[in-house]
Structure formats: structure tokens, C-alpha cells
Image (cartoon, rainbow, N blue to C red; front, side):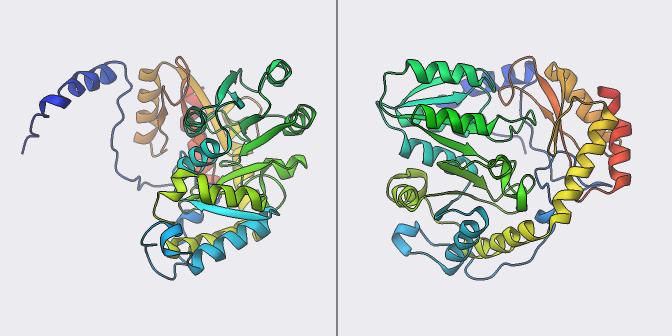
Length: 365
């Protein structure tokens, strides 16, 4: 059965979609990958996403937690996060996008300044926009440029926001330098640890713990190394109380599934206690990086920059045809001219998986 034509108000979208397709930027809807070896583009760095256990309690929260209250699963998960990350309080959100947008738009206000890395995630960018604050976007990892903006600022309150481990480039800022900068100029430090938590740092507590610094606001996700879904913010009790009252993506959303929260708490404990998972993930990444002749890096993310979207798409299709599941990453996810294969290592990969992937992918380096 052929699709009906769109209504008049939406007819322009067909031409827009044709334009995306012509530029090699149209997003497809592939089925979940089930192949001969684990995916090399998943964010399931510890392999916990394949663990079906720990689900107990209601499947749905029913409404916002402000309306129906907190379930046992919510409390259990937030206690685990507080204990693991050595924070005073935690608050869970329905997604990483919701956590970043909610936290940034609630904390920064008109009359504030936000200094943001140019390659920060779209959810950070959108949260900055919604806040009403003046946003200064600086070149990637340029601490000197951050300092120039902070020195020249007119605003009484300022925030510096960064990812700790950048999801598309596999690099990260000098967090000790950023902490010192924020202390020097009385700015708040907001760090998104989405791709570092569970994998990097002592007990998998991320790059802030690895650097021995404390973020004023630490944002993490349950949907990557922790193998579940949702996200969280940890920090001072006053921070969490404020977000409970003013983070619109929390206040006006149904709470996280209590059953999912119980299971996520179990995954937090396992990620924290089972060091063999992160060791295996990082060992696989080191082996794969060396085999591909990739630039020096750290963590599980290895970008293979190819430039043109069509080249990246063709490379991904060729790799998948040989049993290596990777995807082409194209603008606007990455800057124009930097389309790539984003290769990720996981604790699920065997030595044979890594060797097979390297043999296929090194043709594109």
C-alpha cells in the first residue's frame, strides 16, 4: 500500500527531504543490528545493555513525580548514584537530552553568561539557548579563549559547560585547568560525563574523579555504559531541590519507570564494583586504536574521519557487509567536512572480534 500524500501544510517537507537525500544527509530507519559479532558503534561500553536482570516494581511511574510521588525504584537509584559519585543529592531524568536541557535552562538565566565548547552536544546547545543567558561559544578545548571571555564579561554570574569526554571525537578538556579557571573568575562548572561514567576514572566515576576535581553540576546518563535508559544530575542538595522545582523537562514529564530505575541501580553497582568490565573495554579500545593507526586517544571512542558524507556512508555499508557494524556520522551531528565512522569498543568484544573489525576498518584509515 502506497503512502498517502502529506496534507497541504506539510507538502514542503517532501522537497526538504529530497534535499537531505541529495546531500547524503537523510537519516534512515535501520533495524536493530543482529550480526556475527557485537556492534562497533553502540554506546553500551560495558555490555550491561545485554543484561536483562534487576527489573522489579511498576513498569510506569504514572505521571510526574511531583504529582504521584517517588517510587522505591527512584529512591534506590538516586541513593546508588549519590554513593557512587560522592555527591549530596541526585535527580533522575527521562533522557540525557532532558537532563542537559532541564539543568541548563533552570540554572542559567537572562543576565548570566554561559561559556560553551563549540563541539558540545546538541542537548547542551539547546539548553543554553533556552536559558536566556548570553552564550559565548569557544573553539574546541581552547582554555585560553574561555579565560578571555570570562575576563571581559559584564555579567555578574557565569557558567562554563563542557563534555568531559566528547562523544564524536573521543577527546576531552583539561578539567583541572577548567576548575581552576572557574574558581579564579567565580564561574560555575557544569560537566556532562555521559560518555565517561562507568568507563573512566576510579570506580568508573568519570574524568572529574580521574582529574581529582569536583564539578558544581555533574550530568550523567543511564543509557550508555550503564546499559539502561534515562539520565541524572548530581551535586549539592540545593541544586537538586532547585531542579525539582524549576527544571521543566523534569517537572512536566512522567517520571522514570520505577522498574527501570531498580534495574539501573543494579547496573550502577555492577559498573562500580566489576573493574574487569572497564578494563576489558579499554584494553579493546587500545588494541583497536593501534591496529587502525588511529591518532593517540583514550577511552572507547575512535573516530575515523573521512570528510564527505557519501564516502562515510559507502565505508559503513562496506564494513557492515563484512560483519562489522558501524554507522556513518554526518552533519549536523559533526561539523561539515568531517563525516566519519565512529568506532566504539565494548567489554563484549572478544579479541577475535577486535581483530576482525580492525582487518576490515583499516582499509578506510
